Amino acid sequence: EVQLVQSGAEVKKPGESLKISCKASGYSFSTYWIGWVRQIPGKGLEWMGVIYPGDSDTRYNPSFQGQVTISADESISTAYLQWTSLKASDTAIYYCARRLNFNRLDPWGQGTLVTVSS
Amino acid sequence: NFMLTQPHSVSESPGKTVTISCTRTGGSIAGNYVNWYQQRPGSAPTTVIYEDYHRPSGVPDRFSGSIDRSSNSASLTISGLKTEDEADYYCQSYDSTTVLFGGGTKLTVL
Image (cartoon, each protein chain N blue to C red):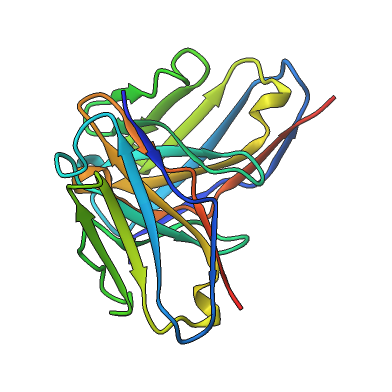
């Protein structure tokens, strides 16, 4: 069974750094892109970017370029989403998902709630 | 650049049929595939339609997708509505540089 399991909820203060993870199983991690999607509570889905773990090729939505870093570690089939200095506006649920043909995302991880508050 | 516009909400009674539209502004709806996702409260999204009209295994055939070149829109139709279909539905498409979701439609089955 293809599965993506994300790290647990985080509560951080503005200015702190954070790295959340997404561990894949049940398929060849290196040969599928992994995408990250943001969902602010009560709002819609926003495509953040994707990474190809096989060669770490990364593509960002311009709205998120420079705000986050997407990375992956093939050896442990895990993708990451990282911030160096969190803002309150980063409070959201972050989902990872495997990207299939034509940008279909399937399956999705369970989501990681990140709360940034002083 | 392009946008995908969905109605904010729709409602219908159990057993009826509802259609959710997704209108593309900027570029042709037929030029890039449309995927549809269902998101129940408190859960991650799941695919209900991919590549305009294909249904993943496990999705009931009450769900169907189509595109209409004349209105430059995609549609998700759910027939024989059940209370379990109550959820948010998002369309998604792309161009050469961008992947976008529509704003989402809240389906109420009452």
